[in-house]
Image (cartoon, rainbow, N blue to C red; front, side):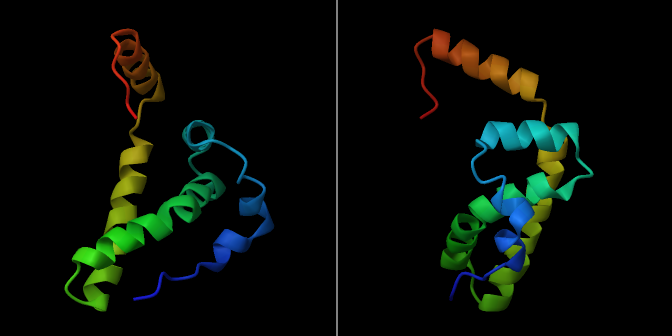
Length: 102
C-alpha cells in the first residue's frame, strides 16, 4: 500500500515551518491551538512513518485508513493536553541522573 500524498504538505505556509524543531512546533501549537498550521506541519513530518507502521499491522487498506485517521485524532487530543513545562522538567531531571531519552 502506497503512502498517501497530502497536498497540504506542499503548501507554502507549511513549507516555511519545515526548519522548526519538533519542540518549537509544539510550543507554537500550544500557544496558538486554533492555528492549524503547526499541527499540520507535525502531521506532514510524521504521517509517512505513522502510515507505514499502521499498514504493516492492519488487516486491510480500509482498516489502515481508519486507524490512520483515528491515530491522528488521538495525537491531536494528546498534544492539546500536553504540558511542555512538565515534559521539559522531566527530560532535564533524567539527563541529570545520567539517563538519555535517545
